[in-house]
Structure formats: C-alpha cells, structure tokens
Length: 276
Image 1 (cartoon, rainbow, N blue to C red):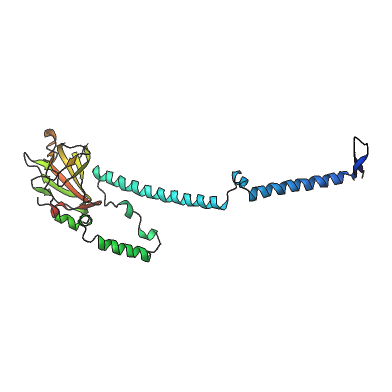
Image 2 (cartoon, rainbow, N blue to C red):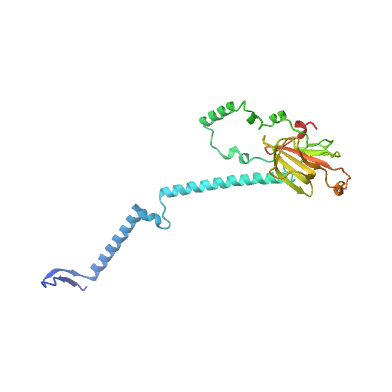
C-alpha cells in the first residue's frame, strides 16, 4: 500500500511546521468517522430541539395527544349534527303532511346504553336538588303533557267531528266538517312557523306555542297569516274549506278542517284538551 506524507511549512521561515503520513485507508476511515459524527449531530438536533417539529412525519407527544383529542371532538360533533339533521327532517316531514310513527328530540335519538358512563354521586345530587327547586315552577310544569289540560285552548272552528284521532291508523288529528261562515281560529298564543300550500291538504298553517306545543291547521281555503306573525288564542288565522271547484271530491265529501296538536314531537288527541 502506498503511503504519502503531508507536510506543512511556515512560509516566512521556510521551516516545517507539521507533517504526518497518510494513506488511502486512513483517508477512508477518517471520512467514515466524519460522516458518522455529522449524522449523530443531526440526530441530536432533531430529537432534542424544536427543529424536529418542522420535519414531515415528526410530531411530539403533546401535539399528538392534542391531535387525537381534536379528532374525537370532531367525531362527536359530527354525530350530534347528524342527530339534529334527522330531527329537523322529521319535523319537516310532519309539516309537509308525511305521516311518520313518532319523532324524538335530538337529545333522545341516542340511547343512554350507548354511553356506559355511570352517573356520579355529584350528578345525582344536582338532579335531586334541581327537581326540588323546579317542583313548583309553573313554567316547567307547563312543559308536561298533563299540565296542558290546565291551559285554555280555543276550538279551531265550530263543526261536527267527522273523523277522530287514531294514531294506530296514522291519523294524528281530527277532521271537522265545514260550517258555512265559520273561520279558523288559533287555539293558543304563538308564532306562525309555516304557511304553505300543498296539493293534498290545501293551505296549511303551523303555529308554535310556548308550552312546547305545536298546532297544525290543514285543508284551509286561504290563510291570513304569514311565517313569523304573532297570533293570540281565538284570533282568526284562516278560512275553512277548499276552493269552490274543489269542494266535491270523488266521494262527494264536504270540505273539512284537519286539526292536529303535537307536544315535543308526540301527537296528542285534541278532543282531550279542547271542547269542540
């Protein structure tokens, strides 16, 4: 193996300042050690300094935990939005005349069995104190179905009931035969949330009341209120019957008003709460 000598001279004195022997093997070994040293320094910089966070594929533990937490939160919000969308779709179906078996509020679409977390003692204590506090609160009592019997609900119109409420047949209201000269009245104070026309039900009004109560008036000749209007109990909101050229169908039935009461998404028998 050939060897070489590297000599360093002082240019001013022309004296030899340093000299040592080198060979190709020595050069290769030196280069390998230098490369390993550079790699080691780079590794230490990436691991123990914030520089590594800027490299793709390198995430520290705190950032990873935060990322997982945000993913779980987004998934939870997505499920909640889907339940609310289903609830709104059911409400729209009812208002459009599509009959469905039942409708549940968003907070009951997911059963408790889906959350195996047991109720803590602190939560149970809070629920007990809250129930005692709200026991004599008239506002909270009005949210129950039984309390609706204490409300004064106006009859939507005067006439003979030709078809009664029957949830088993998906008939969620009563049909009241038209009396000449009669109008449609709001059964309770509230706000009009829908005023529309459908081919099957004619003009239709939906009024939302404060006690989680919704009243629906179908098969009107025309309506006097629009969406957003405030109405009071007993106020005229529409007239009865279809147009004259539609007053007789294939069975020669007289026009009628179809009236429904809903409480928190559940249909009620109007005859229990209103004296027709």
